Length: 197
Image 1 (tube, one colour):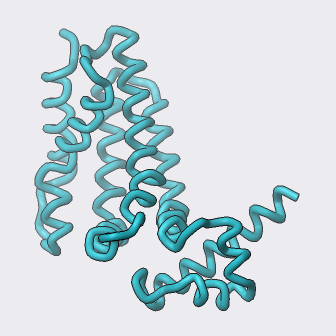
Image 2 (cartoon, rainbow, N blue to C red; image 1 turned 180 degrees about the vertical axis):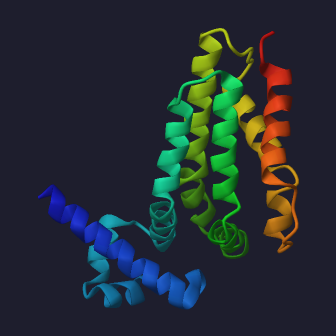
């Protein structure tokens, strides 16, 4: 029974992906997606409570492989700085992908008055933040970091990594800071703030 449920869910995601790509988020409707699927809106709502949740799921489904790579990087061996540098390279490669920039613009421009932003954030960035926070907490417990708040430290690391890289891309610029240099300086700054001598 579980595999049939998974098959149907995957079919819905595939149909929704096609519709969102063809007409955009704003013009897409659950009726259009149901028609593409060859089912009813009731079937869609049995799996996803809103268009916002379905869009967020489509987004995250497309990024699952990289998300798993990010998780694996945090589980890898090495001192804190080495692991964070590996994580930082994968993270920046992910958040600067053109489709990720397009998703962010969609959420910012079309998410007003809807739950779209919340849905995308909770399925994507928030999950990544939780993984990073847990890693930092584990390393603090091992005496490698000095943290007042692992969650705040996770936000700081993300901000340091993205500084001068993601914002220009979001505004349509093509020239940004070198990613490798950004990772190097971000990890060095993070360790200077939170690392133990």
